[in-house]
Image (cartoon, rainbow over all chains, first blue to last red; front, side, top):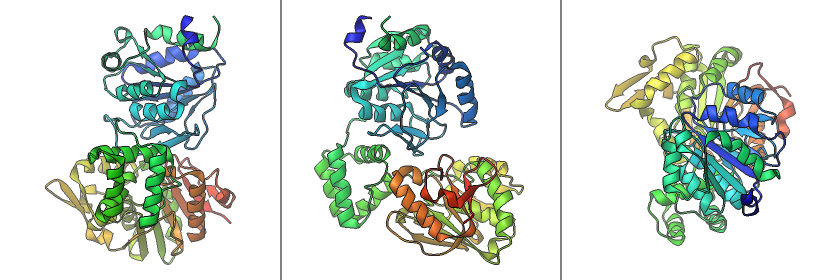
Amino acid sequence: MAENSIIPVIQLIVIGGSAGSLDVILKLIPALHPRLPVAIIIVTHRKPSNDEILVDLLNAKSTWPVKEAEEKEPVEPNTIYIAPTDYHLLLEKDHTFSLDVSEKVNYSRPSIDITFESAAEAYGPSLLGILLSGANADGVDGMKSIKSHGGTCLVQDPDSADVDYMPRQAVEQVQVDKVLPADQLAGFINSLFLNT
Amino acid sequence: MEFEIQDKEMDILLQNVLERYGYDFNDYSKASLKRRINRLYALDKFTSFEQFRRQIQTDSTYFRRFVEEITVNVTEMFRDPSFYKAIREEVLPVLATHPFIRIWHAGCSTGEEVYSMAILLQEAGLLKKSLLYATDINPGVLERLRKGIFPLRFIKQYSENYIQSGGKQDFSQYYTAKYDWAKFDEKLAAKMVVATHNLVSDSSFNEFQLIFCRNVLIYFDRNLQNNALQLFDDSLDSLGFLALGAKENLKYAPIFRKYKQLDNKERIWRKIA
């Protein structure tokens, strides 16, 4: 792909989604190349219930290890991290995780904005943010922050989203780099690292 | 977020705060602290970093607000009900064998969890012989704890938490509702000792059979976490219990080998050495 030459090496991919995003994530993860030199963090809005169910579900579908992000844990490549429910997940400059139980943002904890903003500051141009389906404006400020720190923004095509409000807000308010239908997200990620 | 404090500015600010007021935030986790500082700056409509810094340095009333806003004071009654169920069923029967029970809630914030514990003790018939030490870095939140008045809009959630924690009474017997507030029974507060305590700089002040420190260590860097845990270890009786937040762990701490986690998934450890 021609884009490869202009996109800097991506070290971290942060994916945010709300209503209707789980299906997209469940399709994206099995389609990833089994080994890529990048970490993925997934922040989804869901009820504070059993986190293990989601982690187990994703592990069953994924060739990558999937785990809940733990505080102070270093971010490792080829690993998928899930933000725990009822905590905000932040990235530190030394590429470790911090947890935070401060107020909800946009009625949400974890908040996509908080993870995206802290990741933008910690990773700068080596960050790719992906915003998926959702009925909430959470994530839009985070995408702005990723752009202003030189990162890359990708949005699920609102027309392919279950609930289009979240991706549509991002497309309208942020200079996003790419808009892709759900079924092309994994292929795009793979293409960033593989010469296909 | 439009304003972003620079790393260098944050270092200067924290150094000023340490020199002027003796509060040391240098070993707090940076990402979260920075977000709180940016939030306060926007909330109070400052227009320059210098103005913000001057206000903190020269106005000790504003400094109190600074501490209250940059430390996280989000809490609830019977937070994580399954945790309180474990306290009720596994820890209280052990405490009951002691002639006198001392419990420390370190970093208790506005005290919802201290009141929760007082309710558990009362229901077990142990409140009479207990003392609950409630401490926080932040004098403002302790004033609210002393009053025992919490927003009524949260009571439905608290009541559900209480039932999920194994509570069998009518929860409304513990408070009187007035306008938008619920005032908790003064009998519960009668056994509380409330004081400021800074986990970063202050030392141990008593011996306890149970220490709660929930969702405080996540804001500290590893070094400061280990210092706080050492302080708890110094303050716990042998065979005492240490209770942490749902995502906090002892497993990386030097004191780890002296403790055994209870046989459930709750974050409660017992001192065995």
